[in-house]
Image (tube, rainbow, N blue to C red; front, top):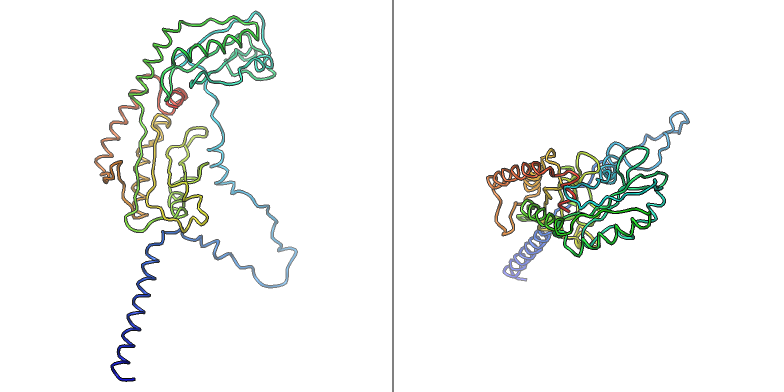
Length: 355
């Protein structure tokens, strides 16, 4: 083989090696970022070698949740807030008089099969003989009076005449079953009140979202989970959803975080590439004291920095800090307005109206 042939062969080998190296580098570059392995799990403590000793035998522990952290999170997510009662501010109210106290068992047996009139929640409360409090009837108690109610408005719109008529039918049937006498308000007055409340709610509803988009390397679902968990987010009930729990149990989550559900359910999620995730805030559902928008901005900025992403709006344009300040000022006025109407954000009434 001549010198030229040898040189060409060496040159060809070098080119081939460069091409293979570049392909490998490109493939690695295009892989989504993965969660960092837990060092403690990767390097478990090594037990000393030696004769076993009864005195030194470790105490047997049953597997379970970390009670210092997991229990608190589960409690915050699963313990329901006491069901709010009927309120004349947002409910049509129909008192039901009875001649003698009615047992909780009889009241429960008289309840309608569904607790809605159209798209509006329907409820019946009884006046507990022992406590003197209005409550949802339950067995073992006796009630000296009842009241039926239907919500005037929610995010589906205002109570209409058909829904009001369905409310009357259900309340009348309940009253007949317990030998009670209902008193219904005027339908036209209540429907007009429902429209006014719906107009107010529509003008003061606010659901905000920020989109985080990867600048370069995509993210795996595990990487998103790990990054968000550092800020206090926990896994939600739907794949691809996480929530930031409220500081008080029974309240709605402060923030939501969502990404592609199909990616979260993939056979090998760590090989799935995500390029966007969404942070969301349902303003009327969260207490003002939680400072939800401030925490939303902080979470978005922190995640964008740590995950090499950018915060964008619905048009794909970057959201600047001064824009966040303007939104914050508008929200403060919204909070004041809701409080002036006796329906503060995150309160029982506020959450019912904006649901």
